[in-house]
Image (cartoon, rainbow, N blue to C red; front, side):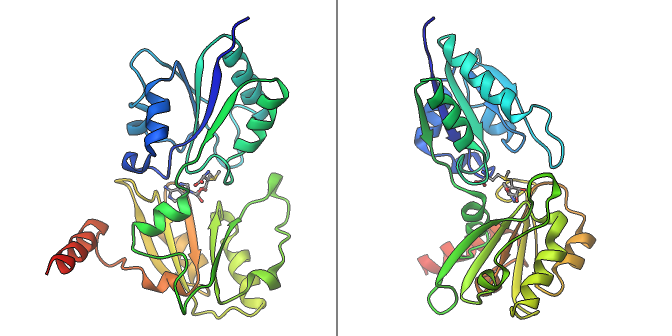
Length: 259
Ligand SMILES: C[S@@+](CC[C@H](N)C(=O)[O-])C[C@H]1O[C@@H](n2cnc3c(N)ncnc32)[C@H](O)[C@@H]1O
């Protein structure tokens, strides 16, 4: 049995230009690409024409391929001497279960490498010129999952999370945003604290809305977003310019820098 190698690659939040050079090199050399639902077709098209591609995509509360089977698939492919790219949205080690796959590969003695990607929090906020930290507005940032396994109740240190000096970025929070916002207010955050909501960030289908902690659950329900949604809670969210399409904002920044 000859052995291949597995690259656990972060594809970034959607825009192919946000791939790292290393991720692109891995993709271009892949024999097989095993990918998740959030990876865009534009990025998959960067793999060689002859490369096999296997979708193991997951949807909230619906797992077409159980994690255990994905782990076994990676082991099998590597053991048949393939260069395997395991492609995940954002960064493979941020709410991506990449670390579980890495542990399984290590357990089977399969060589692997982790190629970090731009996580949704970074890519999506940058698209609206929102800094995650900013002197005088946020001294830190926390990434939080808004969804626990099998709909187990969210059991967070709400008091610790309700810190006005910290930006909170909530992944997978759409179903529980009412509870999350309510608990944060109950523990001291102001109802008028800005919240930026981004759906399909960095893609041509991107949508966003500027809201506040007390209004966000209502606003998101009314928006009827279709795609992955990210919540940015904190004073920095108030810096977002969401009145104009992002490219117009970018053009204005470039123009004023050149003036
Ligand atoms: C399973 S997590 C994967 C996170 C990924 N590993 C990362 O680092 O960005 C999926 C969640 O990430 C967020 N997300 C990922 N891509 C996004 C995008 N383009 N726009 C908005 N949210 C996104 C959403 O909250 C989505 O429910």
